[in-house]
Length: 145
Image 1: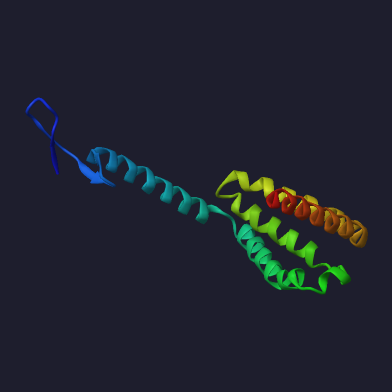
Image 2 (image 1 turned 90 degrees about the vertical axis):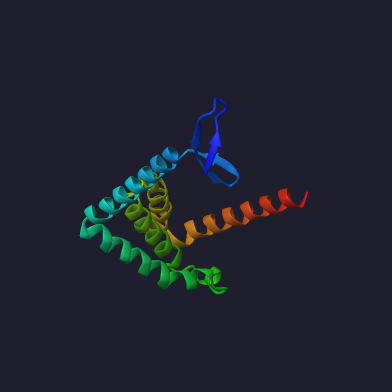
């Protein structure tokens, strides 16, 4: 498309969402997106086999234990499902941290929360469950107001 810039010369632009955008900006945006995709692909292929293996182990832990964790009988038994889900989430976040460094924070947090469960599963589990129930009650009271 062509527009008149006021001095008699014609300038080309593309309409995006009703707004005129110069083609040079579209090219710059395309180059940035292409560069980002190439960067992420290179990061993906540069990650060692060990990290891929740990991500696969994390997915297996999540799949195997998430159903038990969400089941109704879990609260009475206090099995290791919570521990396994936290460790699996930590492994997956550590793998994702190879792409985006900020994923180290949830990885460390998940493993940090899982560590006390190893030492005293029933006592720590009761504390976690009580804290979660209190947090849900607070959110419910806040939203109901």
